[in-house]
Length: 148
Image (cartoon, rainbow, N blue to C red; front, side, top):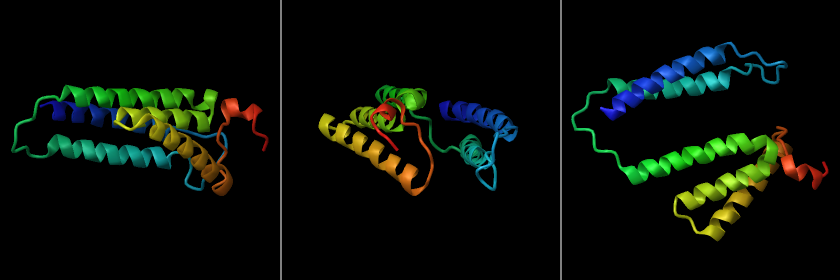
C-alpha cells in the first residue's frame, strides 16, 4: 500500500517536473542537445520506474515501515539538500567533502576514514571536472586561497 502511494506521488512529481524542464531555456548553449536533455532523461527513467512499481502485480503483503532505515534515508536526503544549498557559498570542494564525510558517518563509517574519503572525493572530483573535463566549478571559500 505504501509503495503504491509513494509511486503514484512520484509519477505525478516527475510529470510536473518534466513540464518545468521542458520550458527551460539557458541564456547560452554549451551543449548541442541543449540544457533540457539531462533532466528530461532522468525524469523519464524515474517516472518509468515509479510507474512500474505502481502497476506491477504484488504477490506479497507490504512489509511494515522499518523506522531506523527510514530515519537513515531522511538524514541522507537532508545531507544532500544541505549539499545543494551549500554548493555555491562553500564551493565544490568543501561542500563535497562535508557531504562525503556526513554520508560516510551516516552509514557507519569510521570518522577518520569518512573525513579522508570526503576530502579526497572533493579534491579529486574538482580536479577531474575543472582540469580534465573543462567544467568550471565554484571554489567558494577556497577562492581566496587558490589562484588559477
